[in-house]
Image (tube, rainbow, N blue to C red):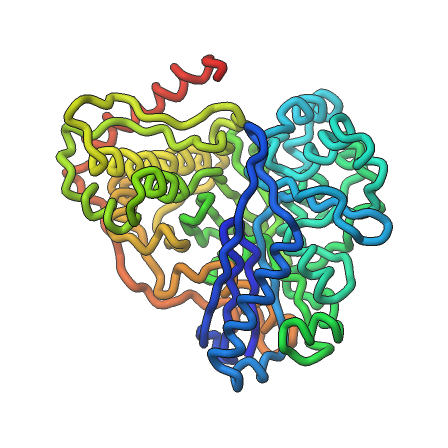
Length: 484
């Protein structure tokens, strides 16, 4: 058996995978998010380890025999977060997360010092990346900056708790703005531009390599055997790719989680920072990725459901019946946006609300906005030189037929939903553990799941979505100059 653990933003998920690559069981434990100020997003790193132990404890109680058979562990997690540690490996401050927008000024400083930053690290300077966060800490919290001796990504802090080692994988390292993507190593110029001492950064591994072994203390906490191999694993985007077998040039998928991605696998490094796509190292050797990354993904549905005090499924049923001619517009930028705007300050909102507007019409507007954000993503990917023809769909948002049909209609592309698609990165992490343990080749482990359903675009919807997409895009540009 192989264990995959995904350190998400809203939950930690753990999945046990059998030697044939099939999922045996999965469990999750919810996490909370702190937003103490506008544009800030933080979490307590201790909560990740506690949640991982809880999720694993549930799996052990569910199926003790399978749990005893775990041979290797793979880790996945939310990317870009800054976990700052002192010389004693103690956390200095709450982790600054991927959807934190406080460091826009520091991004401009980095670009002024290093104009070709996007060609080197595969992405224009963005506040979601890790490097500008460290520069922000230097300028805004100098007392904390002086204490820094190690900088880890979220899943790698869990690795530290498991193995006592500081390490990361190429795909997670890719999202820091410190990695020379083409050479797959830390870049001194990028470190210098962000006031980062290279000695603070962990050793980089390919995702299929072993990064350490489970210590006695960690084994006791997880109910596992001491010495189990812990694979390097992957940041969540690339782990999701392994989970759906996207390891060959041209393989593509849509991820609808808290954030959203349109991911295309590549056999070469293809940066195009002008389109605000992410050209990153993949977690498997000799592969890269071109990713349109949206901060808001399917999370606007959860936000609206909380405002309405209703279940998402209930609202989606109502939205599907809403009259198309009375649907307002929604901008989904609750936490700013990356692709295609690289704008941490823009915010969401409804436009076109009238007395007859009800929650069904508003939820339909939210679903349309999610679809239109993927239209922007597709255009950005194509501007980077890649063509998408038949993407797969993964993530919690992909469970809705209505959502995927709307995305298919808006994109004008067929979308295939894989069986078990909601597991995503945790499954990919377990598969990386399988390869790292030597029990399977990458080709044997990273197989594509069976297709659960195919969604074909409805030609009759093309004009409707084309007109609404034009207005949706115009609204962003009209509202961009407004300082909230």
